[in-house]
Figure 1 (tube, rainbow, N blue to C red):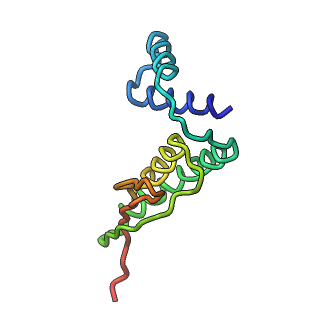
Figure 2 (tube, rainbow, N blue to C red):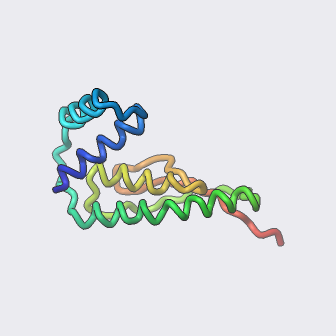
Length: 129
């Protein structure tokens, strides 16, 4: 089942990059997605995929909310923090985690450390004393 999710993730990335849903591009995308090498990592658990995809769906309204906040009130403070990655993450799930963090306007992943940490840049609104 996770093989299908990896294929769908690759196809989604392909369609986002090409912005073309013609039959020829769909066939090329399927071919490229199938031919791309797979890592020899443990397969992601289905519940991890479902949970992460649910988090992506929750992040959509949060992203709109943060965008409005940035427009209405200035966010003039920046911080960089290390956040622990969830255990048992496959490369596809790590990509989705980074996408989820970067999707919201106030955060962006600067670097992923192989030991399981994300270096995340935040903008914040500081209250003036």
